[in-house]
Amino acid sequence: MTQRSEREPGTAAQDPQSSEAVTGAMSIGQLAKASDVQAVTIRYYETKRLLAPQRRAANGYREYGNAQLRRLTFIRRCRHLGFSLDDIRALLGLADQQALPCHQIDARIEAQLVEVRKRQRDLAVMEEELQRLTYCCAGGVVAQCRIVETLSETEE
Image (tube, rainbow, N blue to C red; front, side, top):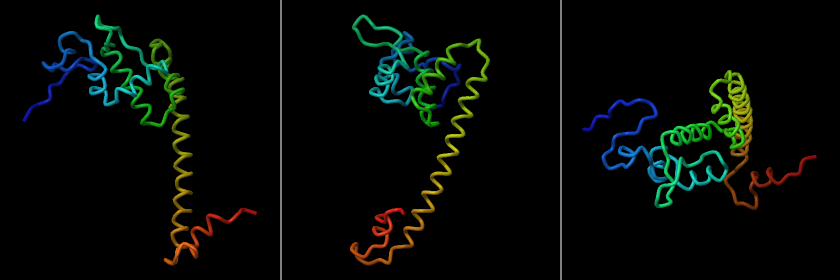
């Protein structure tokens, strides 16, 4: 059984197979693995100007460092919280200004929380309607299906 070593946040893992351990630079594949974000998604974020490679190596390949890993992790976590790319761009812009008070970030987080709660209410209404529809079915044939009939009714 291998033990995980504790390391400083933002430092590279000392994997002897990784060029990162030696040079501090990662390929897009290494960044994808380290961040749990697919390489195609990393390239997409680059086209949207959310992420930029640190530099290009002599062979022309993109090289990424810990700053890009942290930024990509931030983006991934924001996406999981339901933020749009525009919202993430705004949050990154705020995060890049270290001396600013954090009330603007707080406000964006609170606004997202309001949106999540609204979606939860909407989903609860949809759940109730779907549950109601399941009780309409008598188990016959589609031609006599109350679910199809109910969904097809025009609203007056």
